[in-house]
Length: 212
Length: 212
Image (cartoon, rainbow over all chains, first blue to last red):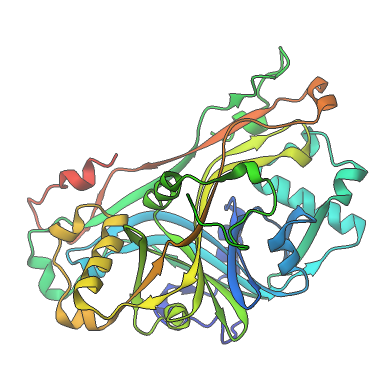
C-alpha cells in the first residue's frame, strides 16, 4: 500500500489512483527521465533529469554546480515520472483525455556522502537509462566522482495514477456520428547509430542492440 | 531572441542553449503533455497536464476543483516540456547523456475569464493533443465550460535546450574497446482502437488515422 498523505491523497478522480506498490515500481522502472520540481527563491523550477531506483530509494545525479541539484539538496522536492500511452478521443471535446501512467514522489532530498552509496546511486542512474553500461563502459574516476553530486529521495511518500481504456462519454452523446476510441502512442528503440569516431571492429553489444 | 533572465540564463553547458524562438515553438508545438510546477504550502508540486499555444501564450485547462490549477491561479509557475530523442552511450559512464529537447517557461499564471479567450485556450489545448477534434467532436456546453478553469501563461520568460549528436569522450578513452554512439528513441502513433460502444458505420477520420 502506498502511504497516503494530504499531498498524495488524490483530490479528484480517485479511481485513477492505485494503491499497488508494484504499479509504482513499474512506472518508475520503465521511465527514462523524471521531472524534478524544486523551489528556488520561492518560485517553482521543473527540470528533466535522469534517475534510478534501488529498493525504496530514488537517486539523482548531476554536476556539483547544477542549480537544480543545489536547490534540491536537503530541500523538499517533487519528482514526477510520466508515460503517455495514448490519446483518448471522445465524442465530446470535454471528455477527451490521455491514457497515461504517472508516479509522483514527494520528500526531502538527501545529499549522499557515503562513497559506497554514491557508487550504488550512480550505478542505478546509469542502468536506468542504459542497462548493462555500468559494467561495460569505463567506470567513474576519482576526479569524475568528485565533480558529481548524488541525491537520494525516499519513496515513502509516493502516489501513482494510471488511466487506461476508451472514452467515457455522456449518455446522450453516444448517438452522435463521431468516431471515438484511443490513438495509441508507441515508443520504441531505433537502430543504434555508431559514433563517427568509433574504432573499427567494435560491434554493438547485445545489451544495447537487444533492446529493440 | 529568447529573453534572458537569471532563471533562464543557463548556468552550465551554455552550448546547449538556443536563442532561437523557432526552436522554442517547435519543442512546445510537438509536445503532448507538459510538467507544471507549482508551490503548495512552500513545497514544490509537479503534475503532468495538457497545454496548447496561441502565439506568445500557453493555455492550460482543468477541473475548477483540481488542486494544481488552484495553486497555479495567479501564482508563479514553471512549465516544462521535454522530448527524449535518444540515449547517448559513451566510452565512459561519466559521459553518458541523453539527446533531448526541452522548453522551460516561467511566469505568473493568469486565470482567463473572457469567454472568447477561454474558448480559444480550450481549443488550443484540445488541438495540441488531437488536431482536428475541436471542429469534429461536440464542442463544450455552457455547463462544461462552467466546470473548466483555463489558465494562461506568457512565453515572455522561456528557454529551450537541445542536445543532439554522439558522445563527447575524454581523449584517452577513444582507445577503449567500447562501443559508443546513440540509441535513438522513436515515438509513433499506433493503430486507432475504436471504442467498443462505437456506432456501426463510423470510420476513423483522416485527421486521426492520418497521423501515423
